[in-house]
Image 1 (cartoon, rainbow, N blue to C red):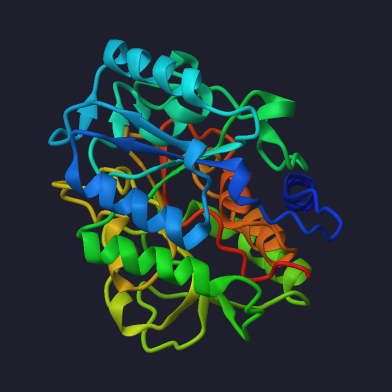
Image 2 (image 1 turned 180 degrees about the horizontal axis):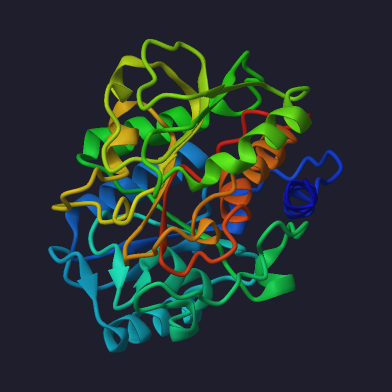
Length: 336
């Protein structure tokens, strides 16, 4: 009994609820990084700039091979230096307008842009990595206050899919939908480790959004999905559900962030199905919950008005191996 009480107390502390905040990010705070060697990258950047009104001075161009999944540390360091030189002081967040590469040596591409390449955010085998100072923080200016620029990729299985994801993010703003958060307790013991938090999350956050804890591997034919958290190698029937604009969905597994060619399900399948953002690891993480989004933190912060990139990034304690893909400015619960 003492052990259960202690666990609940730790979960409560990890959620560390914050007051309501209207922390929607602005166009001046976002820079789009474009790969000049990737024709689709320029098209994506142009589309996103128009949809979100990103200033022209916040468009940063780099040059790198676009056909490979990964680039090395040295090449990235060169590119990152060029990006820093072109980044206006107002920029707090990066958006990467490409799908490949998505990995930098032992780090995800989004983590490498957020922190700079740093092997303390890497791990070979089942080991912890460096903790993000942005984790569950109240910072609204992460670059100014923490020297971090949280980063998301505008990646997809096709150009059409990326455009659709961007459109859903824009449509989400201020929509305040009648929605549900689905927390799946699956039969996969190794990958359902987040489920131990579900009961407390439901108890504490049901006043903000309808929450359903479901003991099953499959969720089908739901028309109100705003959050969908599960743990499986492959998730069936995800296309049968309707994902509301701004919806976040991910599956805890080893290589969901390997966008192309993995034997496990790519996070891109969530975006194909209609989600606005997803997350997955690009290097074997083992079943550390710290390397994956904490559903309670995502739900609490997003429904309290934070933008997608803020709520999602703040929910991962050890994000060095994890890839964030989605439309970062989506704010369905933004306060006017």
